[in-house]
Length: 466
Image: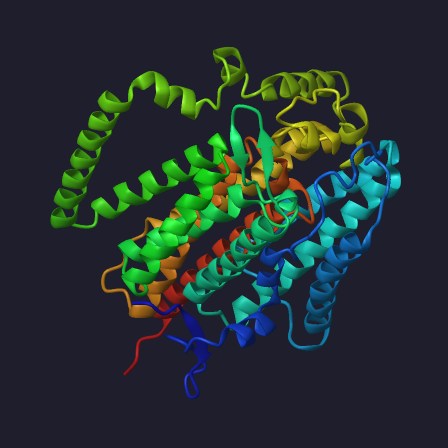
């Protein structure tokens, strides 16, 4: 029940049958499927204020930038070589459908170079966008021929993110300025800086570990430990968006788990009741005012309702896009027209890079309404595909089939977290950002797993052993 699906050719019938592969060592797995190395970054040990006061709508390079680009290009080059010489590129119908809109989005972003205030920067990020998807296409084609152990994919992602968390902890001790911010009235915020976005990687660690714990996919002691690591990491970021998104995902996971049986449902109800009782006791003892003040980070109601000024930025970009439906130019436009304009004490560093604290609004600003439409279509088609296979029930599914569905449901939760995180984080649509890679890796895994499940069901319908 803990193994994923793999296809092999039947020697006499020429059909395919399902079996569970042995897990590879971590090193062999990453060499076999290097797309997961993109989740690692690589981490950048760059101070947050490196580009303060610099016009970031134009091209700027340092050693870390070269390392980031070289990391991506090395993986993309390997993908191109393997697709050219190793085997024929085969993709499922669902994969081709999603990749079609990925191509459309890339072309729209590329065309925005013609009116971008920083054409060189827009061109560079367009190349990075396509390089990332070259890696994904190679992975999907490889998974079509020889699917990986899908549960190992999840655990490998978690391992890489745990390494990033450990690096953030080391930086916090050795050079705190790399990973933390001091905010008046808010204390220390361990955001991770350029090393790793703790507000994203910590919740993902918690989600994978919680799913593994509830479904007994590994030792429960290990799962529980990593759940605590993920939750604590999320809390120390003091990022309300990450906390809320993680709570929603864990709540969905809990309700789904409770539906698996009556005894589990009773246990879930009892646990929820005890939690509500303890929360009521704490609320009565500490006081609602103190808890609310802690949650709102010392902000007033107006700041909270405007999401710390984010809604003002979003309204400005939307108003601009109505007058200029083609957008501002990929990456460079928002940095030119809105860089620093809305800077506040909380978001000075982010806005000096021209961010608008929303991946969806960022895509709108990059290349207008058409790019936003393609971006949303990609996300919706991926979510629809995953949901359709995740909710399917089979009569007597095999152990590999169970494992693939477990991997799919957990990946769907991760993808949903990315969708929620994109509301207040631009990283999910910006190449070279860990959030961008994590969201696209989740898309690749969803499409790959659904392809494996589809091929398995088709083979069972056309072949029955004698």
